[in-house]
Image (cartoon, rainbow, N blue to C red):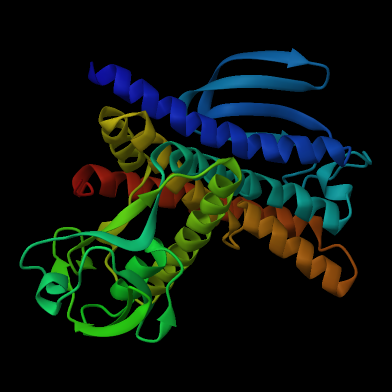
Length: 339
């Protein structure tokens, strides 16, 4: 039975990759760039079908994928349809299309979950016995309006607010029967999950499609902020590399999510889709962010950068990414994420 869950995990991840590469492919075509290959997977080619100028391939390693465009690697090409011969704004739009598609997929996935399960609100439905909220006199039906003077618009913003304090005492403002009351509460830390709680559960509100989209955008916005915050702390060495995972961790997490149910898999796929988008936007040569940076530089200086140097930098970036992938994969094997 586990093979079924693993296949579902591969399918979910493949949808994210295909969506990402489809973004590049469509915008490249719109900009009249010659696309030589559209591949799902990496490594040796299993089979390919060529239609017109593009070969559509399935490769042996079911992680990742790519769209190969004429002139993308900085090779000298006189063809006006080469990627390297397009205007900087065109190249930037092509590079941006992949991450944007991942953000859109995440919004769609979160919207689906919101429409099916409903969304948590800032109105409290349940208090855990002997929890910090219980001991402070918080009641079911109270609506959370502020944490430390900051407005709370939904449940996620409340969770984010109490975790930003890292366990410090918070001032919680509640609306109880149209009367505002204030409570001082010290959140309890869940060591295993590295997060803080006060022992309350939210009320769930059923929503329609348009509200689902708004919910999806809100979830992606919050997750994007949290991811950049994590990256910043990682760079400052405030968090450990033990929380970083690679392809093996992605498959382990996705397989476990598939076992828990389709909606759980959809939820984790939305999370991974945001991570893919952000990772690809990093200004590293060979990533989408590298091409975006090059395009911005060319727009500022008003001329093309030396193609030979761009090719060398891109190749160096590619080697760096492969090396990073190897290191993270080894880390996944020797020190797997605790699920």
